[in-house]
Length: 389
Ligand SMILES: *Cc1c(COP(=O)(O)O)cnc(C)c1O
Image 1 (cartoon, rainbow, N blue to C red):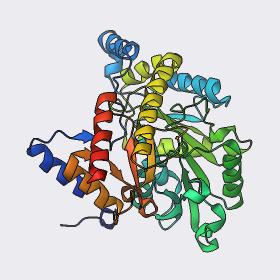
Image 2 (cartoon, rainbow, N blue to C red; image 1 turned 135 degrees about the horizontal axis):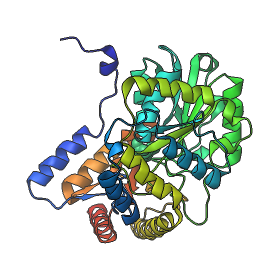
Image 3 (cartoon, rainbow, N blue to C red; image 1 turned 60 degrees about the vertical axis):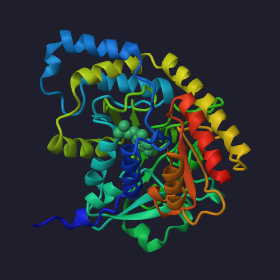
Image 4 (cartoon, rainbow, N blue to C red; image 1 turned 180 degrees about the horizontal axis):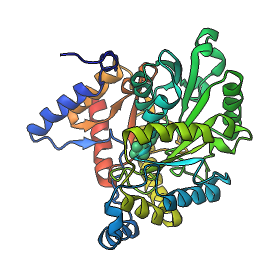
């Protein structure tokens, strides 16, 4: 049997061992509390579900093949949201393409811009899809460490010159998963300037732009003057509208880059179900109520988590955005993996070990805020019990 090298080159799945423990515990009947995944627990808002049901029933043309690059109405709706939210104008036909979730866009974008052997600059720790995308494009991922002393922003000056000569693409993601770090416009301006200097394209994943607290407003990289020369950005209905299962998102920015991405997509997928795009439009046209409600829910959970961690002697700062709390593992554990595995084995609580997001995530763990309040509180009680032993 012949399997492509790029498959062997994919890093091993670091949550595999935790998954095995999880299934074993579940088989023993343990009441597992999952604080690991970042997947909104609150259902999709009724008005979006109702719109979908109505469209599926009455607009039977949506049952046929969709427009490959997103329905024109969906693209106009997304462009209008971008304009209203970030003050950025993108052309709905030429500078925007619909996606089957931003994960799809991240993966396909590397195929669109990186040649085999190119370097792709990837934050580390990070959402694993950036690195995988580079590997699937036969490119070489180069980790940009996100370190606490740099507020979890990459230090562009530390990237060696020979790496920069071969680099064609950089992924960025703020508000950040898993560190919960945020970036302001001056950082994005530096990133754009750096990218132009070294002829690098930036793909900014803005999946958490709406999951912000304490009045923080997350910017778009496209607010930087001149960014349209070398950048695209991705946004997704998944997190703000609790629509992770629906798979609907969009990419926008430089026309040539969007055209290249559209070519890859046209060759590999046929676009998202049109009825889902139309239902997503209901959300994009009316985001305020849902987003305000979700922010309140996550803010309350964030307070619960920070308070409980403080009482356990694990002080950590309030994240301004994202669905996560990211903090150092407690003293006495050799690795984030050991900490997470023992917590699961002894208390049935699942958390994400930092190493699962890359080697610069070692020494940290991530708690997700997407578990109902009572379960979250119970999970925190069990963590406290675990640490007392
Ligand atoms: C959740 C998440 C997304 C959203 O992905 P979709 O494919 O749109 O559901 C994108 N990027 C990051 C970093 C995420 O954590």
